[in-house]
Length: 148
Image (cartoon, rainbow, N blue to C red):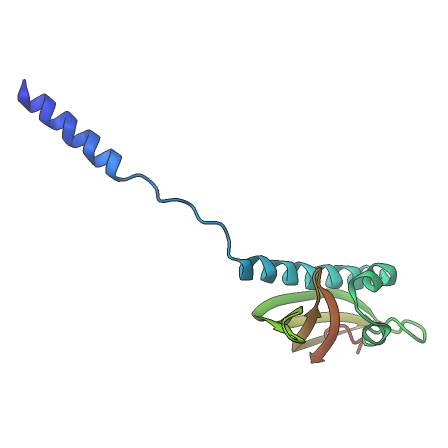
């Protein structure tokens, strides 16, 4: 009679001691990083759809729009694919801690069709996002939105 009771108590002890720890939510930095990646992806999707009005809502100045190969002149090439791979995100406060800034490093590969030729380009871009909600302030290094 004592053996079944002993086995039962060991069984209960083993399973009760293996309970899960409290599940922690994502950190504030992870939430901000996801917002930054979502904005960059939204800009890419709007660029692929050639939706200039949508992009205007996600940028901080008209100067940024000039960097996106929309403005001025006829379209001589069109993007057929654009792939982003997020490499690094730096999050910090500028201007005395008032404004949140995210530097989003993205390696990219794009394929454009120009006349009957396809042109492939690759690069590493730095998207500087500012404010909350984020707006694109500028693109540094190799801009993936410049048509060949």
